[in-house]
Amino acid sequence: MAGNIKAIKGTKDTLPSESYKLQYIEQAALDTAKAYGFHEMRTPVFEYTELFDRSVGETTDVVQKEMYTFNDKGDRSITLRPEGTAGAVRAFLEHGLFNEPLPQKVCYLTSCYRYEKPQAGRLREFHQFGIECFGAASPVADAEIIALANSYFNFIGIEKLAVEINSIGCPECRKKYSAALKEYFAEKQGELCETCLSRLERNPMRILDCKSPVCSEIAESAPVVLDYICDDCREHFEKLQSYLDALNIEYVVNPQIVRGLDYYTRTVFEFVSLDEKTKGLVLGGGGRYDGLIEELGGAAMPACGFAMGLERLLIAMEESGIPFPEAPKCNLSIVTAGENALLKALEISSDLRSAGYSVNIDTVGRSIKAQMKYANKINSEFTVVIGDNELESGKAMLKSMQDGTQTEVELNAFEEVFERAYLDKAVAAFGETDFSTLTQVDLNNLF
Ligand code: HAM
Image (cartoon, rainbow, N blue to C red; front, side, top):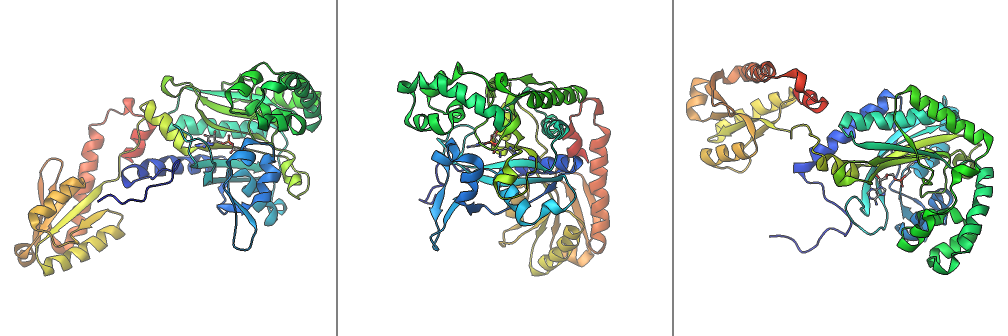
């Protein structure tokens, strides 16, 4: 009975059997952000196209080739956000958050849209967790951002990961660097793709992250930006490294990192998978963007941030066998025979659900046998059958589906007995646990 309309290429459904994994990594991200003083901000999925032209940059792959742009019915050019930073800066300015205590530290979980060639870890609709810190120029802010991302990956259990950092300098350094790049690429003009030819004059740095194989091969031997940065930028970069050392965060300086978005200044960094199966996959990246707030109409104000792809993180976790918390369970299935039993089940389930338990009752009028089968299939931890006999005696048998043990329970004091049986089971599992072998995820499952 499959329908004949399929999901759009490069998009992905998250089914109930998987969604708890996403909920887990999202909650962990918000918790980590909170520990560093970042609080959630939500912005619309679409913005005026101009916002991305002026922030991400008109000569980037994202703006030139990948944006979902359309005119709305009022003939305004609208774009589905390709990333989260531009919208966060727009909201920061629009709501006068610069009048609040600085730095302002925000985080977000958002869907993003890029018309890229879909492949493993590259989707047209994907999801980012991002953080932005507005109003801090010191490299300590960069170090904190990297530390937050690093502790998140550690918490999740991603161990084989490189932190690669670089500095791409300020606009002054960029002028000298752009001149050197122009000279280098001008000699290879005949081999560059059409888009890169147009970038040669306007923004030669963008040639460095062109995805065409020929351009990327040529880019490999291009001059590196680190050789062109000024003394102030160098000092900023060195200080960042000393802070990372103090935090015991291992990193490598990779002078090739320039990032694919125009707004960056000074620090840029990426978290790259080192696991055999996902080697080279960039799980997240970010950097400093000291000119963006002013570019979008605010006062000059430094800022830095980071974002990571949630789908890529899930791939990395699955490929390296990192455990997820257990899928949520149905704590109790109430199996009923007859209308009066159903009324009792409604009453009991309502009380237990208010107390925080997950309870299932029959909503399709199945036989007792079929209800038991369903209870088994949805992994109910306990079941109880209520029929005429139970209603008459006011007592029923609560059955543990794990070991088959049964406990008599008064229907009028159901919650109390169920709670005790449930806790006994949890305590028994706790008693058998060898805590020395537990991971963070196991501990989360226990408590
Ligand atoms: P970005 O490097 O373009 O940076 O994206 C960040 C992360 O989003 C990537 O490292 C990757 O994990 C994920 N990602 C990007 N494109 C895709 C895709 N097509 N499919 C799946 N995942 C993808 C930014 O977006 C910046 N706004 C980060 C930032 C925040 N810089 C400062 N603040």
